[in-house]
Amino acid sequence: MALDGNFVHELVDELSSLIGGRVNRVHQIDDMTVTIRIRSNRVNHQLLISAHPTYSRFHITHEKYETPFDPPMFLRMLRRDIEGGFLNKIEQIGNDRRIHLHFNNIDEIGDPIERVLILEIMGRHSNIILTDDENKIIYAIKHLTPNNNERTVMPGFTYTAPPTLKKLNPRTAELDELPKFIDFNSGKVGKQILKHVEGVSPLFISEVENRTKYFKPDNVVLAIRETLEALEREPVLYHDEKENYYYAPLSIFEDKGIEKTTYKTLSELLDDFYHNRYVHARVKQQAQDYYHVVSQNIAKTKRKLDNLAVDLEESKSMDEYQKYGELLTAYMHQLKPYSESAKVFDYYTNEEVEIPLKKNLSPAENSQRYYSLYNKMKNRQNEAVKQIEIAENDLEYFENLLHQMESITTSDEVEEIREELMEQGVIKYKKTNRKKKKTGVTLSEYKTSNRLRVLVGKNNKQNDYLTNRHAQNNHLWFHVKDMPGSHVVITHTENEIKESDIREAAKIAAYFSKGKQSESVPVDYTLIKHVKNIPGTKPGFVTYTNQSTVFVTPDEVTVKKLEVKSP
Image 1 (cartoon, rainbow, N blue to C red):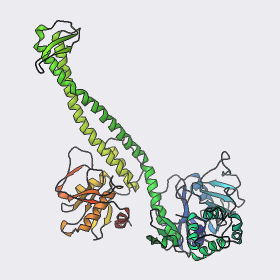
Image 2 (cartoon, rainbow, N blue to C red):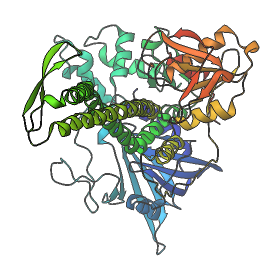
Image 3 (cartoon, one colour):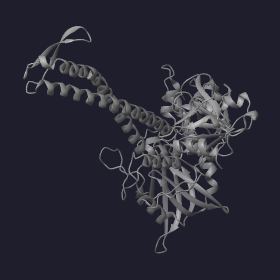
Image 4 (cartoon, rainbow, N blue to C red):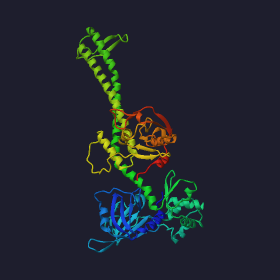
């Protein structure tokens, strides 16, 4: 990916249609991201600006985001100073990833005011800063104190730009000075260009080098300028091992024939690329507490199994206690009272055996003591066997739950996990202010190449609903063999299903399983009528018969192609 200065240059040009628009509303959707609703040319636009360390960006978005009820201080300042005002300028500083949004407004007493919203789109150093017309900081989404920082970003301080090296703007005559900064004999010319040219990324330099083949003092400037002129805006996302996007097609990917997606606008590209990643990251953060609880329960259950194994091993001595009791009873008349041991003939082994005795107990009491130990050990063994079975089922349940949590993609799925943990007594019931948006279970939907509908349950609630309530007896059910995974159902009769449908549904089942990263994963499939709940077990546990098995390798690209996205 490359949201570099060149990309920003094109993006600022694209967003120029917002200039003159009125700011209707400002929202802050998390600690690092705000949205500004601007009405321009009789159309409402939502400008998203993020200083997130991983997903820093700015663009028009059509996605809907939840907003906190209690507005943070930064949002209050934005609402006070720019809501109701007009955006009159969008300015890129040089060819850098710094953008100034200029607003005109009227304050509480009716006087005109000017405000500048400064965007620093610089990865983990990103920031959003509101200043007045005298360059004084009003508020920032990230405050930098004087301690251990090269600059101060605090209310009341004068704004200073981030401390960066002076670089040459490739869109001005400054670029002509580049050869004097490059040592062409030392190699790695591309890295030297990055060091001295403003707003270019390694991706752009790779493109220049691919077009030029090699750099020389007399072609390096020309190569950069020709590449900038040749790249016509056509937003494109390349689906290689590591996805890359840019504001224009790049020969380094086109020459290899790498699969790509093109977009109408840069905003559409950024919206599509970052939204799902942002939502997934936020959902993971919401689920982190529950993930920790489940991990703790897995560790606790494993310790319990270790302790039960010790109990089971110790209970093996019960047969010896029973034999000692019998021998003491048989030779009671020969035993001397208050002895520390008794030597008697063991008629089981035809050998003499010495039995330890409690000196303060009579022979009859010692005999009774061994019978009591035998009964105690027998009960201990029976209970250990019972508890081991329970603990093993618990461990399988929690490990399956942990796997399901790694595949969570929505806040609703987090809520379903929370409800299940409360129902199972893993966590206490808690009141929540979260408004439920749905009353039923939402299943993930896919379509095979043959256009057959495939439904997937991503947690135990969804699995239970899909298998036991939604699916019909003649629907085909899939699950990976002997490992945690999702329930997958083709909701068509067996006569309509082709071999290709079975393999695609099996790939989906393997993808949403613990075998996601494996090859040749065994997937069982059978009719729903052969799938039964196991009484007395945790949610999601079933048994099935009359199954067939197919071996598939999970393929994310195939699964994504088959997915039916929600409107």
